[in-house]
Image (cartoon, rainbow, N blue to C red):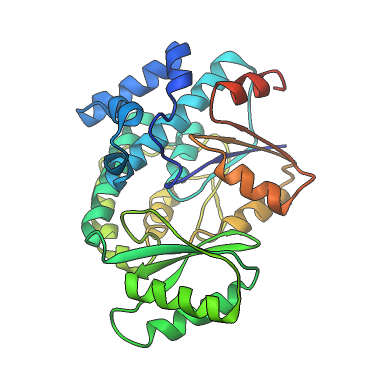
Length: 311
């Protein structure tokens, strides 16, 4: 069984998707649809930058979605590719829902552009922060976040992503994130890496986004997915349209439990994993946890040529 994966924010870079855009009309068509929805040239921003503008959440989110869906459309049009189960990391959940026929691509571009804009608005740049902690001691990081958050009102911090067996992401006020990083270093928990993001995702600072996104999702059509999608918060299966909106709202402030998503896919019988997007972020993490697994990705012309012969 094949598990289809889509990456989330942080995988954007200037030049993303250009190789495939230059060679394939179906990729050009996907990019044009995104430009038409947004009313500006997302393509130009992706290919030419500047990087600081592309990194802004309201631009990065539709950019990553567009490249991810463009690669999926390309593979579907050029091969007999199919999959059994899908999931997306945070923003990537929208890409999964597009691939599974639950949300139209244009509606998804509209939704994630607004999602990014609202997230950018919720916390002024420089107030929040995120950092990776490379450790298997997830529970200890949780305890540090609780302790630091209790110190003062502006030191709130929480785990935003359980990305791999040896990696969690923390998110919150800059002061809180820096304090947790400081304590993690003192305890020798593992390497810490500050993340280049413009807002602190998947924590309570994103609470103002929820109500606004309810209204956005009310404006688009959501159908039953044609294939099961594993959602981020509880690793539940999204197979009916009725609960999809609820899950998309909940993941705004709650942690992405990607480790559990992978475990769930394996419980369902998945034994091949393939990632589509700008970079092979998820497949690289997965390879570190499961060295012998059948893990593939398509992110550029070279990986496309390599993978299409296997499908």
